[in-house]
Length: 439
Image (cartoon, rainbow, N blue to C red; front, side, top):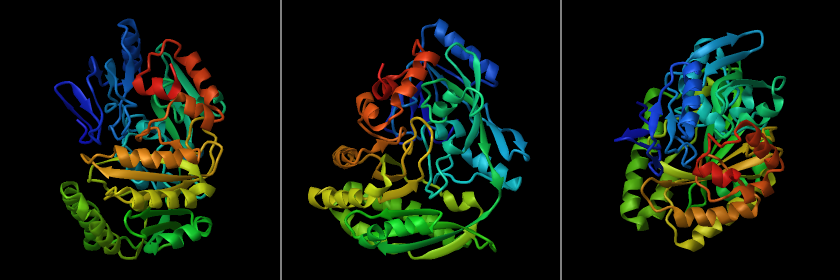
């Protein structure tokens, strides 16, 4: 049983605790053949089918009252091809296991998100990403994938084989079929030097283009109720390795980012008036530091404080205005926000419904501590994001529907036409997909 999503008395819940479902039955297939058979049987029984990873999505993208497919037995690396520089993995493999196994083989993904608890198929299907000037989301690093479609047959997709399915299914939201294996591009293991340092928000926004252009991976966190940010630049390094010391690492990552932060959020939830003061202390607690390590140890960090999140991709040029509007809204609203706002970037990609499809993007993520009312904050933030033609992350809270997406995704119709072809009976449909793709 995964520690991230829980099932009690037949109810499935996601990691953020904000989505629950009661599937008619759960299946954990041990092979692709068993998975295909489960899909065919569900169709015969008139039940919908959804595959679920570790439940790290905050939307009900994986919720179903039909058949819930758990991929925990479909894990592990199938092949490493050193000539093509690819790795093929089963869909249920956690990113953490993939990253560690690749590192032992002297290999690495080019870019990744900031957590690695998710399964490879769950992470890619929802558009999980890190930050990068040239390197894009995890899905953009896919070279091939296998998909079990609604009739129980297997489709192999790449830019050569079924290219129109490949264009869409890399971020397919589970709408086109169930991904059973993914082939990723990999490269020889490299070192990254991370430089973290506080910087005033106005300076970051004024110099945003320069900070983006000068760094392979630039991101920053802005602490609401303050004018402060913490910036992070990750760049490739010739070495030597200089990892964060164990004590310093424990203090920064476990104590400050998870321990003290958890307590601060409990205090803030009980006494919201204390939040601005806590935010000022938090934003000052993080001091500058530099360290050099292999990619997954630099890109990812543990997230033990539970939260709910909304994230939108806006055109990169619109980022400074978007953030200034967000800050003005928080300052005027009387809202008390204890979680920093995270900003990352991505180059344009060629995936049909990627948030960065066809345009250079900046991602802005707003979070609230789990159990705190978040609707007013998220609604006000969403108004700002949509005014900039923002595209929400498929796995994070938003209120948009198919009509909106048809306006912000030039290739939206291409995706829905493909879905009509691959799943005419809507075997893989649920309420979320009905809303975002139309019925």
